[in-house]
Amino acid sequence: MSELTGLLAIWYREFKVFTREKSRVVSSVLNPLLFLIIFGAGLGSSVNIEGISYQRFIYPGIISMALLFTSIYYGVYIVWDKMIDFLKEVLVAPLSRTTIFLGKVLGGVTDAMIQGTLLIGIGFFLNINFNLWGLPLAFLIMTITAAGFVGVGLLVGSLMERPEGFQLIGSFLLFPLFLLSGALFPIDDLPAWLAPFTYADPLTYCVDGLRIVLLDAGQFSLVFDLTVLTLFAIGTTILGTLSFRRMKL
Amino acid sequence: MNLSKRYDKLVAIDSLNLEIKEGEVFGLLGPNGAGKTTVIHMLATLLKPSSGSSFVNGFDVRKQSGDVRRSIGIVFQEPSSDDILTGYENLRLHAMMYGVPGDLAKKRMDELLDIVDLTDRKDDLVKKYSGGMRRRLELARGLLHRPKILFLDEPTLGLDPQSREHIWRYITKMVKEENITVILTTHYMEEADMLCDRVGIIDRGKIVVLDSPSKLKKVVGGDLVRLRISKPNLKKVRKLDFVKNVNFDDSMVTLKVMDANIHLQEILNVIGLVESIEMRSPTLNDVFLHYTGRQIREEAPEGGFYERVATHRAGR
Image 1: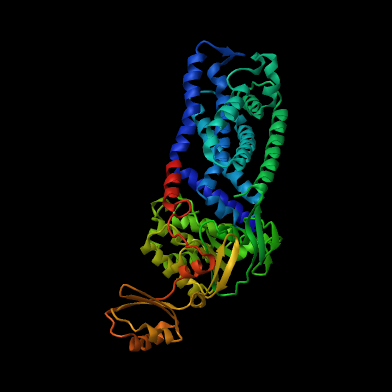
Image 2: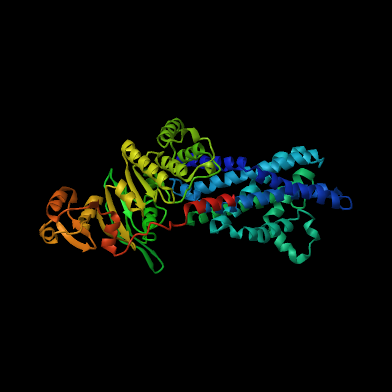
């Protein structure tokens, strides 16, 4: 019981911090929006993919991108908790590391989902014309994906000592994952030697799943996408928990 | 407890043996790098001892870390509250993490905020607090779940003299009202002297000596009495058995006297006509000097409290 309250405590804190840092929310929604509007409209006027306008085609990819960036940065942000010594207060509390980890994941998924929801709303007004019936499934896909990537972020963050490595995460983790996922083009168009990397990228299945439920497009089956994403989320949760248990101050 | 902590080849804590009594204020006094924080972190189960064992409130720090944690409160050397939460939110978060039920927590938070005089600032963000206020908040936080033992790691490090005295007052008040055992570390002599029932002097990972501050000061051998006098009768003074040491230099006599407050008149009776007199009790600094041959340097705090605050504010 007290572990459950502890979980809520961590969540409560993350949510409070999130609502205080409005600049973070704004900037993380703004970036995807620029992609969607400028890139989508600019290229979209001349490009058509499988009969879908380019802006519509990349819409699921842009939502995925927002989820990816928010989730991973959120996770890595635990390095700040170390820096400001707040983590000590959390680690000395009578809570298991698993509880702390899950509370953090819950907080990160909440952040990512708020942004995802904003983008869904914006898409509605931009006339992306997605399937309304697909929204519940889209939220499911988004939640599982966010949980998986928050786990990755927390894993990386728990191993980091100082926040100097932040830049590297952008170049070595975020952009490769984003660009390989087929968010901006069909992955079939890539040279064959890149194929294994795209299949190994969990974000690929988020993009594909969202395309299926929102646009009736996509190349795998929804069940397959959901299975891969669920396994990914379970995997990062296990690894992240283990890493949290070993984390020292 | 009997603890050791090794980092590779460096022995940080060398078979430390200590027993701390219920209800006392115990001080670990030593210079920077002596291993005080390491001891506290081991007792609070944040660090695993390399060998040895320790019981905190009867719980084994190695095997029952959950029970240990539930029964202790800790105020870290560095500020460890979240500065973009309010004071009240920080307390609430703490209550939740320690499973203090809602209505009880609320009552307790109001009570503690009142003790540390932060009631009217409780809804301000912690980043608007001064260093001293933040310490007070964390002091209140450490007591929120009614721990039996409170650890204070350098409770006044980096604070200005006035805030330091405030914190001392709050600590004394809390010890009285909460009836808890306090284990604190410090490298400020006057702090240990002011607050502690017993003091363990730690140097290079070892306890050098352990006793009450007044007894420790006695070991050093009496009070210092300085007299300005042109023609002292030193012969007679030397015969007094409570005078341990006599030094005469350019019309200044320095005496080391046991219980000078009692014997002052006898000295004045024999020494002659005195122009001025100055008396000083030995400090724990003299004790430290006595046992280690070195001074505790009170300057150069570790990490610089204010610098740290400044850095992470810029970072956020």
